[in-house]
Length: 87
Image (cartoon, rainbow, N blue to C red; front, top):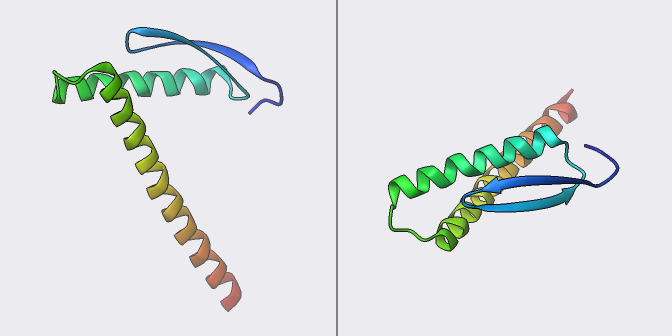
C-alpha cells in the first residue's frame, strides 16, 4: 500500500470509473479483472439479470466471502494464541 492517494481508471462491465485510493495500480487492476470475470459469470448463469442487480449480487457475494475469511482468520488467531499460551 501507498501513503498517498492515487487515481485509477477502470472499466467494469460497460462503464468507466475513476477510483481514488492508496492501493497500488497492480492491486486495482487485479480487483478490476476479478470483478469483470465475476460479472461475466453472473451474466452466464442469469442472462436476464440487469446490470444493477448483477452489481448488487456481486457486492453481496464479496461481503459474504469477506465475512467467511474474517471468521476463519479469527479462528486461526484464537487457535494460535491458545497454542502460545500452552507453551
